[in-house]
Image 1 (cartoon, rainbow, N blue to C red):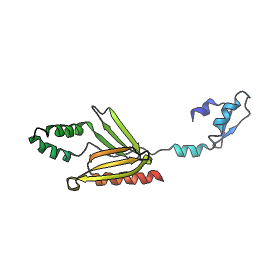
Image 2 (image 1 turned 135 degrees about the vertical axis):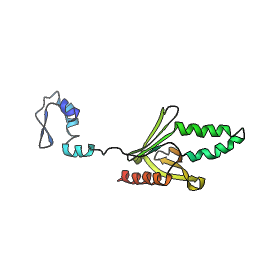
Image 3 (image 1 turned 30 degrees about the vertical axis):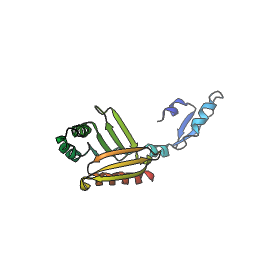
Image 4 (image 1 turned 180 degrees about the horizontal axis):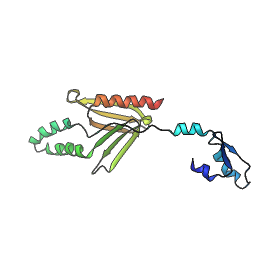
Length: 170
């Protein structure tokens, strides 16, 4: 039961409908607002019934992104990009579920970004390494962008994202 139904004593349930009893005059102004917001308990229970969240993909960026920075170690300048991509392997975690896209990053995963599919406006991608990996850019309705760099299995994951976008719009 909802917490406000327990709080409002002049209401009782009859055939899955909330029916108003006679109320004391001092209590009527509070209960009317809440009374009219819930009419049929079965409809509300159906709306609140949410399917469980299923993880479709979870993992770090692709290991192929380490190849070119590793080769560039031969130059002194190449050490910096190599360590940057190596740290991204340890500190970034992508999670794609049937309800949201989540990116955990930072030392120990202390920074987390969650995006629900209904907020996504557009999805673009750029392939690298001959189409083996891709950088996926998600543009939100408020024009903010989230970049999933070196997304492994990008064709499959991009298909999952687009499919869930369509399902969330229905």
